[in-house]
Length: 139
Image 1 (cartoon, rainbow, N blue to C red):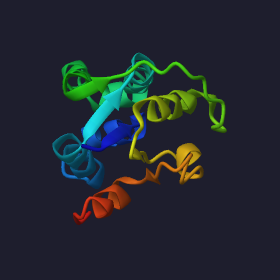
Image 2 (cartoon, rainbow, N blue to C red):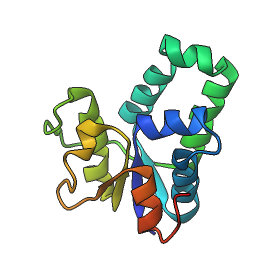
Image 3 (tube, one colour):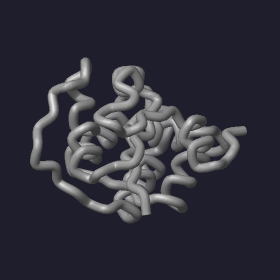
């Protein structure tokens, strides 16, 4: 089975818009691939969810549930190789995880990651592109 690395932007978008493309892409990733996760990536997602603008939009229970669902379905990997290739240093943990996991895709809405497509042979895809790659429709 293929391995997908999902970044914070997709998780946040999926939580904010239950009927949106990010939610469908995240659901497809869970159903049709293995989602890889590391402590660093989970910390980044948790940190973004804790920002005031998201704390106002999502209850604490919803934020916790989002993290728990993601963590429960994940293949846990701790990267051993440091990567310093993203223009936003906070996103290097996503690249490190993708490398360590042998990811077949990085699912993101983050322009700092998208500009790297493909990164070391790994497609860096927006949610709609990810759905198309899986043979689904984004709408």
